[in-house]
Amino acid sequence: MTDIPILTIDGPSGSGKGTISLRVAQALGWHMLDSGALYRLVALGAMHHHLALDDAAALAEYALHLDTRFEVPEDGGEIQVYLEGRNVTRDLRTETTGNAASKVAAIQPVRAALLERQRNFAMPPGLVADGRDMGTTVFPEAKLKIFLTASVEERAKRRYKQLKEKGLGVSLRGLSEEIAERDTRDSQRSVSPLKPADDAVLVDTSDMTIDEVVQRVTQLCRQAFAK
Ligand code: C5P
Image (cartoon, rainbow, N blue to C red; front, side):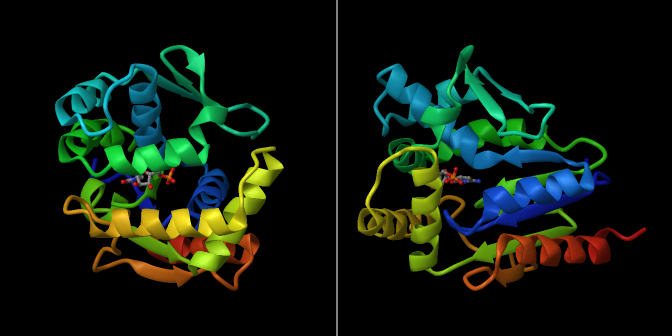
């Protein structure tokens, strides 16, 4: 596994990680791990099956046997996600699922149950891994680790726009509060808290366009992975 090139992109919600990771993975022709989707899937499945979001043993068992499939459309459109055979792409992105995901993600046995599954995404020619603890816990040996950040206000604005485009109604103020709350929970939890790896490159995207961030990350990749 160690000779497979791995780029980790960690950071809080709304820092642009998802979009940037996908764009960089496409540009490099590498595989992509959206680790947040796994926590969202566990949360969604738990809600479907009426598992309590604090029942560590039941959630870990569910996470270990998570029956999921990711389909990458040929036309480069949005990755389609299936849970137990059902397309859940839309349900996965709601704020309710995101908040529930952040709760199940704080449970150590759930994280342990998903560890091996995440590591299995590392395949040639390379992997872009998007999450919170990619550089610190899941792929500590990754050659390039990036930590993206942006102010809470900017992240709330981006999320608001994204959700609106998808036809999901939310309030900007409510989003800001939820993002701040989720940040606190993600960075203060005792297991795999959200924090940059010691050897991560920090990129503040508050005043950058998506294209500028992609350019910066691609440039860092060229330096790190040059033969
Ligand atoms: O990135 P996304 O918003 O999809 O992640 C949903 C939640 O899953 C986050 O708020 C975080 O609590 C959790 N998560 C995590 N570790 C990861 C990825 C996501 O704890 N590597």
